[in-house]
Image (cartoon, rainbow, N blue to C red; front, side):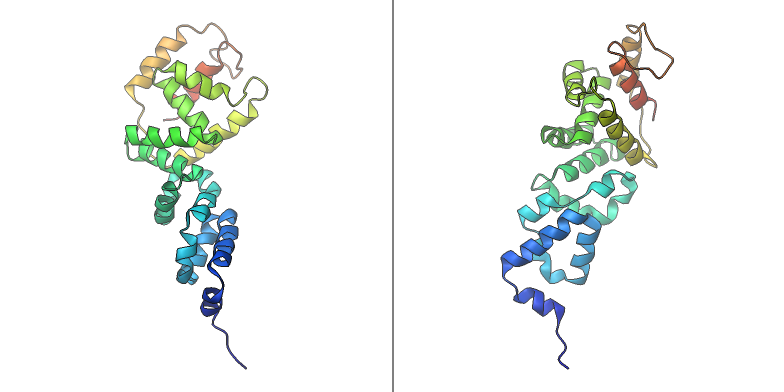
Length: 212
């Protein structure tokens, strides 16, 4: 009985078919994608095409601690170059919080937010609000339509909290300065969980600042 070499079979396929195969795997998860490349490294050229990398699904990593990113750094770096929104968001968080590279972190988060990625919109908005830039932060938070349904923003916040679990994050002086100045203007719901038009931004900022 003839034994067929899977690698030879895959490489015998037209390149556009190899791309389609890797695209399908990329949409499933970055873990599956990396496993396939480990077994079939010859599919690397197809895997590294911009269309495939832009679709590479990092969602699972956005719902885990940033400490889980390291095994996927190479794929993350490749995906950044083609504007993968989840990759931009993850690298932005890593730079801003873990590496304390504020400028670079904000640049990546801003790019992801401009691509209408919810987690990045929320995080960039709340960071800018906490850094004393409400003219930037408030419209970002408003774009998630919290007045109609706070659940969308709350999911973003939960993902962000999970990502920061196990990461030593600094509570910057500018956060406390902004918090105190804002708190002085709040007359409602200071000490409970209710969030109204008047106190919503303050409450969101408070959750962010005091998670650290």
